[in-house]
Length: 208
Image (cartoon, rainbow, N blue to C red; front, top):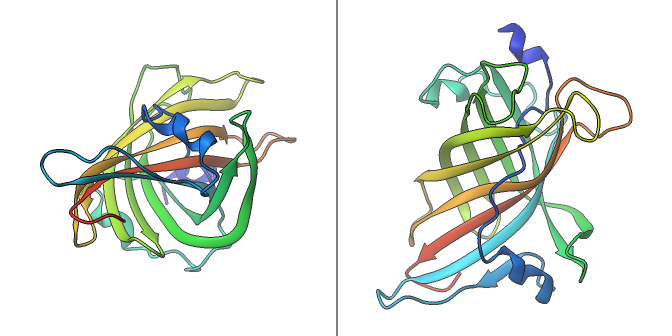
């Protein structure tokens, strides 16, 4: 196993480019589901938001050793964890997420710069995400660290945006982003390993 795999079991999450409509979530306490404007092409635009937490204790244990062979790059890190729903307060901060898992996510990552120099070297990422009421998605994309010393040196903040390469039937396209991430890449005491908010931006033939 590549030594980079040992840097962190949660080195997936990078805070990111929020979708322009994500701000609507604080007006709708609907646990992350918002309908956008419908286009003239007959497609419905919908947003779903979830909290992702990497967790090595989540099955399958041990992880699927063949999964990263599907990534279009040489992965140096594998992570997996659950998705849970959450609500936003009027202050637009996480009010508390529902502990019941509503999905599962796993990813393979290629990291080539362990200094995480801000905006210097992109990190490649390949996701597979299964959401109970939507289905299974696959996505590939890029992440950029935006800082490596906030609030203390060794804590990484940044961003990822991904395009879908596999979608459930009835979904025409869209993209996926991670936001609100704090990544404890080197296991510093006093900080969680990693967590993020995941947004699905979807276009579908029927309302989801």
